[in-house]
Image (cartoon, rainbow, N blue to C red; front, side, top):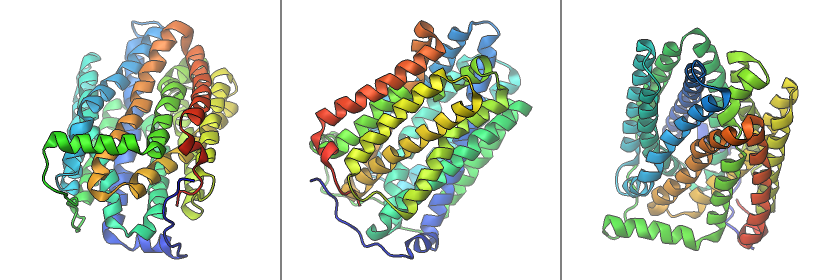
Length: 419
């Protein structure tokens, strides 16, 4: 069965990670950046929906929210291969710093637009700039992290990084809900400050973060080599493509403003709670995985987790009881964490350092497609089936994709050991 070499497991691994200053700075920066993104996404979604509802129907306003997801995804799609090759050629820390600074400018631009009260198109343009930045920041961070810890600590480093990211994903939406209830301008300003702090953390990392370069080749040859590696590794390809299609269909987060305002009637603060619920479930699972990483039957567990993700999406679609809705979102978030942990472990452990940027870039594209493009898909389907029908359709689709992928990718279904 497919397997990856088992790194040594030491009882002081978690402590060893936290005492490594370069990794601690890296982890702090990722936490602050994720916190900023989670908060800002809430402010953008709520502001766009509020502005759109002034002149549009519920379905049309939901479509407008979905357009923001599309605006972030298109530059991510266009720049992915270039970004991966760049990350495997240049200093990864410097790339990450430049991306954080670009995100500071994006947040400042959103604050200026909100204070001037202009239309929706400036938000779309700034969302596209943010998507361009993320096309480089995600593969740079994914490739940088493994350079700061020894291989034996990498599985726990992945889980610890996921734990910090999920904690930020809980606090970010809650913070965004509070800030946008006061003023969207304040929400954007706080995000700008958090991105600036993340840039400082990255600047303070003192380590050799240049990639391990192979023989000099053209940019096109570098890109082709990364694609050939990914296509030939059916286990990695199956894992990241499963996440792409399952979350693309099953993602309910894009329509949470609609459910908060017009289905469940819980307002801006309730929207923050709904948005944070998936991260709560993911945080609990990440905390468990940090101490007990998945070691056996990894492929089957991933497939079952994605199937559970789709089932809980269906439950959320038809729930009209707020506690049940929050519970369903929390469970689907925990199930998604299993998929995230598996995918990140495969990409970072199984991929050579000199190719991590390119493989991580494709993985980032798949993640971006499953999130931003998934929000667009939800908005489009909502125009045809309504918001409830759109989410229900996505949940059923995610369950169907799980069954198809179990048949299409036997190496994924039969994979036994991950770490």
